[in-house]
Length: 462
Ligand code: ARG
Image (cartoon, rainbow, N blue to C red; front, side, top):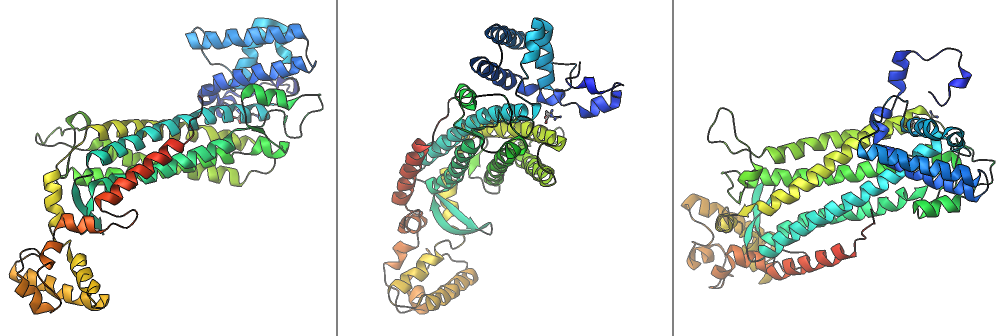
């Protein structure tokens, strides 16, 4: 039975029903819907809008519907949406008392409330997964703080860096993501229930009762806005998009670093795949899939932003389009965060290869220029001198640490014996001791700082 069929002389066409329905996807909200209805009926009872007996019957009925859904006894099907399903099921179980549940309520404030309850728990879970990933990254930093690797710009070797500084960089990205989710959580955590269809209600309701029962930190302050506001979902999708951007960058690094061309990391067999034709292949499909799934999450953000931009005040059915993308983004980001944490824990580092690579391709050239500049040569002049030294090395097939002092001196009189201790990858990384830099001390401080900020992140009760 439709909640609104009284007005109509003829039934809706089968294809219209099929097109209009949302039960096939909003059934995910069954628990939130029943939770919100339990709170709503409690408030109606306490405010004497329904009788004590009706309230008790409604609540017993709702609880039996919930337990039958959870035990698999009751299949969610056959109605327009989850709100219609729960109400119809309730009425079929308890009769007229069930028909009083929708007093002082509309599906418009109901769906906004259900969706916020769902999104709130989801944001809390994503925050937990992000914390786990940050801990994994910090663990890798702690394990590798003695090791160095090449740092890249333009995907060309640039300067040697500390391995811990590398993992800390991703730690910083995901920490910002976690902070963003905890900030978004606060804006999700606002109760729209009591806004009615759009204009509020003439019943003597007490929104403070439902707010407290549902554990919302605040209640909406404008009923028109409350029923049509999906900013929280757009924000959630933006937060997901940025997490996916960061994961996708990490995927890109993982794919490169585990290739034989780089040979820095070894991909665990448990997270690799093979080829049906090339017996030797060990492919990084998991990383490629995470990178590939980034697109669909961005797509869901763009879709929702586009959907809400044309919606006149207040509720319009366009807003039903808010859920499928949200659920898909939620599943995608949870899967990607979980699998990446597990895979990273199993990755092994070829520290010898990384250290060798850190010294290749003149990565200490900046240190040589800095050496001259620190002894009075203007930096731009020093840059030019070292550029010529690099060219000389390329012609003579030499490296900065195989040049003799005489060869250095031929380029500038300022060089003395100690230049030879400057041109080592480890010395180069350790020389950059500025806050956030590549030295071992700076990387250790980076770990400490990340851990402190990780501890400060809230953890919300689910
Ligand atoms: N299925 C609807 C949605 O998800 C529920 C609200 C319907 N409200 C209405 N006035 N038709 O948005």
